[in-house]
Image: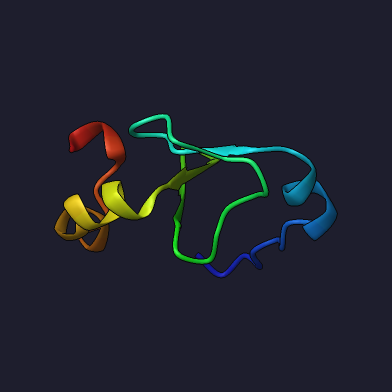
Length: 68
């Protein structure tokens, strides 16, 4: 819990598209600031605005996306 979080390299996130882990929606210019980022099992996953809003209570409860 007290480990520092590594910051993503901005040049890497803009170079490759980001895909919503829930619905598959693609953002070609990297993750927009409105998307939600979650680290599950050591893997960074992104969720689009629509998926994040639909599952807000589960996200705030820190449930893994497999539970939604």
